[in-house]
Image 1 (cartoon, rainbow over the protein chains, first blue to last red):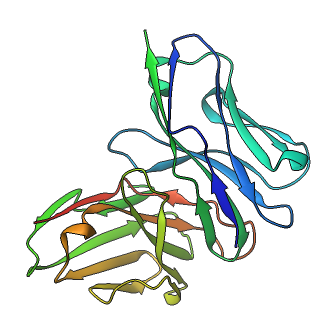
Image 2: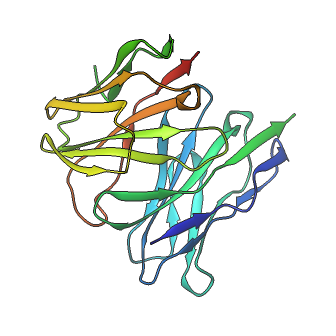
Length: 112
Length: 115
């Protein structure tokens, strides 16, 4: 069965600084990969997804992620964070019908 | 109204109560899901419906009973819950079943507290 690991439980970053969130997955073949964001009191919103092709994918809100097969990673990045980026971020992998596996999430705090 | 709508947003119930959570999607999607979100744990898939047929039941206790009367509506009926069932219950939908098609649209969730 596939699994997803987000090594960082909590990250604090200054407004305007860069952000990188780590995601590692365990799966034998090439998975379908996702990043979702959850703002307080809200459901999850899709930031970006990787299915195939270019390993650097662009998403909404200025986020991007890079798929690295050799490292089984799909890290999320943003060059310059805004206070509104404070939220919880979830990496997910889909390798079977219906079965999205989520990581435990990384909480991002943005300080002024 | 668009997207996935969940009601109620907050629910407090005793262990002997019976209540229901409702989910409605206005996206024309064919698959609907219930997830449980507990603090600092990965989302747990509870149930999946495709074209109103249940296709997944992830060993969920029988005190949780789903119902999907049509492709736009999904319910989660709750009875004799335990305090450890307190969590955020998220409903989601997706266009089609199939590998890689699981781009989920989530509702805002129903925060359940069991006393």
